[in-house]
Image: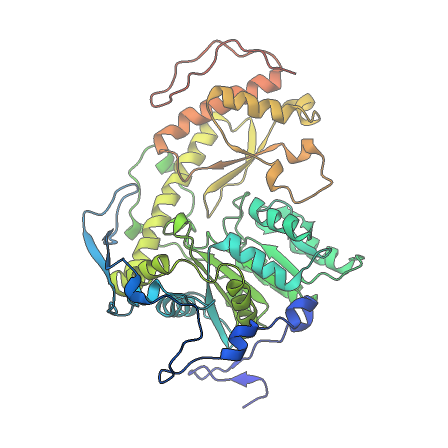
Amino acid sequence: MAPNMETTGTSTPHPLPKDLSDIFVPAMRVHRKSAFKSVMGDPTSAMINMAGGVPHPSTFPILQLQAKVTSPVSQPEGALSSNSTNLVLEKSRRSHSTESLDELLQYGGGCGIDSYCSFLKKYTQMVHSPRYTDWSVIASCGNTDAIGKAVSLFCEAGDSLLVEKWTFPGALSSLVAAKVHPVPVDMDGEGMDPDSLDRICTNWSGTKPLRAVYLVPTGQNPTGATMSLERRQRIYAIACKHNLAIIEDDPYYFLQFAPFSTSESLGDAAPSGGQQATSLVPSLLSLDTDGRVIRLDSFSKILAPNLRCGWITAPSYILDKLQILNESTILQPSGLAQGLISKLLNDTWGIEGWNQHLRNLRATYTYRRNVFVGMVDKHISSLVDYVVPSAGMFLWMKVSLGPEGASNPAAMPRLLETMKKCGVMMAPGAPFCSSSNGSPATADCYLRAAFALVDVDMFEPALKRLAQAIVAIREAAIYQPAVQVEKGIASPIPGKMAISS
């Protein structure tokens, strides 16, 4: 067998991951388990363990947990399955693959519940097929929690992190708290521009080296951009060239869409999950032969946000560091939430049921995207520029404020205030801007519209109101006479209302 190679049970050997510990921050290179756990080790079943401050499970008052869940079948958008099944967790008895409530409610280690992680490792292998050995998964409290921990492996106060020019505000907040400086990389319709990334790394003159790049490759937040396979390959090659770790934040990966169809925007019946044959773009993890991709997944967009559960995939030696960080902060996500998810995915739905659920989600959001984009084209296409998203929950629009408005830093704040008065709200661009020296006018000429939550029949009235607000700002005048309030909208559109300075 060749050096640094292991077999994977097939005829093709996979390499061990490269050791990236030389680009860890100094503190992480020596970060060890807690002194208490180092001394105690792992107690055996024959040992009388009186070391830990652990409550006896007989004191846990929850005897049984029951939940009624849908049985995933192909459904039209917005329709709930009429079929359901009961999910049950027992106090002292395992439920098939899933731990008992006594185990789920007890203190646990920083990796997560065994059955939860076991399913996710198996599913990650099925979907992404990592191309190196000695990898695994660890539980997280969703991607916002995971971002901070992953960044802390490679960046400390005063360091810099490569990020997309427009990016997730939660990630930027984590950087501010850690005193890490974001380095904006230009973007286009496919997300991060590889030429810009390479140029920044090649010409870097900072006092401390660049060690990692953070990006959202699928349904990017806020732009909705999705990297093609070729784009991902180029980004990965540049990361290898400059020895960068890649933090792949991918909560929208399973929300990739079928091609845009104008027929649905005209009111045709929504597609069912069984009709969706969307081919998922391979992840950066699936391209990784070095073990330099730390992949972050979350159930927030594909199951329910406040379960606060996700998972991180990386080489085992990196997960060892993340386990320590978990044990010094969250310990692990809620055992009840992990147990519920484990029971649902392992025993109740199984992999085929989970896949059908994801197909249904893709059908739902494909339909919503199609309807919303169709309404945008109908009502505001002359007022905004946009790229049709192929994944995620967002449409990113560059607002045309006219010759005077585009150069006036006050124009966009006025638009936001006017939108509020009209009864419509979308996210402005400024909070997503990773450039600390960008002009307010440049940062603020964008709106992010989320088409995931609002009822589909509210798309048109929302866009009519947005159109009225943009026109009012462009003309820098007063509103036109009040229009009829659309059905289902509580707040009326104001009539004559001056635009304040």
